Image 1 (cartoon, helix red, strand yellow):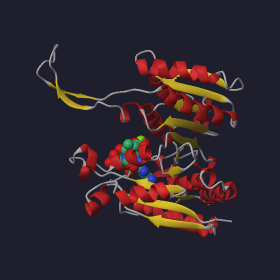
Image 2: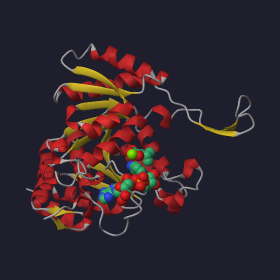
Image 3: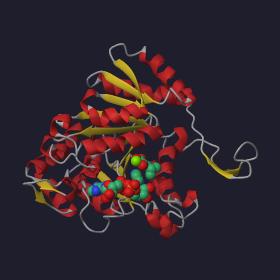
Image 4: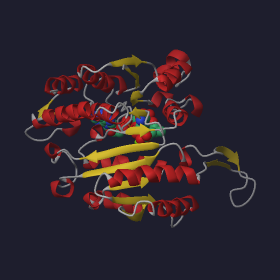
Length: 358
Ligand SMILES: NC(=O)C1=CN([C@@H]2O[C@H](COP(=O)(O)OP(=O)(O)OC[C@H]3O[C@@H](n4cnc5c(N)ncnc54)[C@H](O)[C@@H]3O)[C@@H](O)[C@H]2O)C=CC1
Ligand SMILES: CC(C)CC(=O)C(=O)O
Ligand SMILES: [Mg+2]
């Protein structure tokens, strides 16, 4: 059976890193049909919208999506609905991709690349489960309004709305408990229940769901402390489950434990295990077009695609082993370069992974 994969490179470094991941997927010799479409600022330039209908249709009709990144400073003055980032939010919402899995693994070869001491990060293997289609990123109403009473009367005020429905919390909690069952059976739910009603509600529901998973040890942590613990003693975590905004922030922090944000892949899944796979980082306009971005997060995202959406754990293992092999050979893009290693470009890193594929 041919698997249809939508390839959406996007902006900035997106096309450079997705090219390498596409090459790796093609080289596996599987029955895959890769089809590319425009998304983000590039789609806005060409079609007047960051998520053109043809791109959305292709994504919906595919078994899985390989996504690069979107965004560039030059689009920041556009109305919100036309900004490149809306394409990503639109895809997540339209496809119901509520479960975002962000594994933060420190490959032993990169112990020196992390900004943290090797003893703090060596052996690190944590999984952040981020809710992806709710929270303040999608809550309505939002906007800018005039204040009509109180100390700020007459001023303009920006506002957003944070909310979570019970079913939204339940389904992401189930994903996280099930993931924990397959790992060290420890789940930490991160919230801000000491301040936010939404968070207290989140916590109450997670405690209810926990009754179905007596074999998983559940703990709770406020997000400010979680940010601190991630850099103080990250190995104390196994699986973290959290809301959309806290997960966005904590996963960037976790990325630095692995040496670089260029190493952190992600899978965004819906209830049918259809998925969008993308690096956790953005379009990095500061390094775009220079052939220096790290493509490994995208290549590892392709491995997650094979594992979760195509049920090809064997092929995923091959890709992950090839990434390990190139790191073992000492090959590094500038973001993970350390003493005694060899600097390579984005495309040379892709070449090396292809060569290392068994
Ligand atoms: N999933 C997506 O498409 C996301 C898009 N963005 C967008 O990306 C643009 C830039 O946002 P930033 O906040 O700067 O975040 P960013 O993740 O693009 O970059 C942050 C820093 O990490 C570096 N970096 C990122 N990926 C790298 C890689 N593969 N190899 C080496 N270095 C890498 C960048 O050079 C930069 O110094 C904005 O327009 C933002 O809205 C941001 C986050 C996610
Ligand atoms: C551009 C944002 C909506 C996405 C983001 O920062 C992320 O998913 O990590
Ligand atoms: Mg982010």
